[in-house]
Amino acid sequence: MNNKVISLDKDQILEYQQNKDPYLFIDQVTELLPGKYANGFKKLKEDEWFFKVHWKGNPNMPGMLQIESLVQLCALTILGYEKNKGKFVYLSSVNNVKFYKKIVPGDLLKMETELLNYSRGVGNCVGK
Image (cartoon, rainbow, N blue to C red; front, top):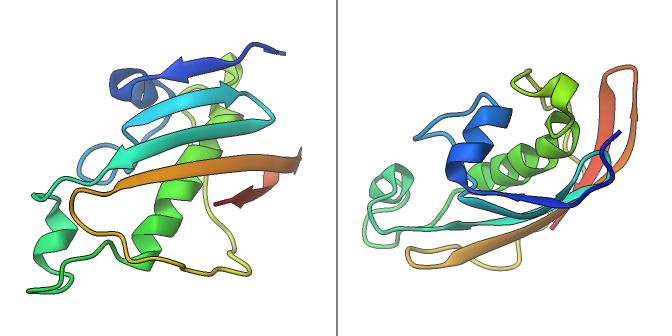
């Protein structure tokens, strides 16, 4: 078991998980403690593909992609173990979602996630 906090740049993130551009929604993992938590961010550039279609004249990051960003980050708490590197992680449910702010081009989407428990291939996470 790894008890060391690590950070990952985008190239390193790609070694651990299966999402690739344009469906990778993490630019940097600032802190990752496998089996415990992961913190990171995505810098939202004006040319992101979803800004072109959501909504013309009022671009913003769709809520489901914000959730996907959190899922990808939290998945790294499991994929951060060397034995899990490169495997697939699936989302099975989402509860108690609240959106407090519109995410627009130029924003920095900061994320914090925590793995509450993980047993028999099923994990329970929280994220903000």
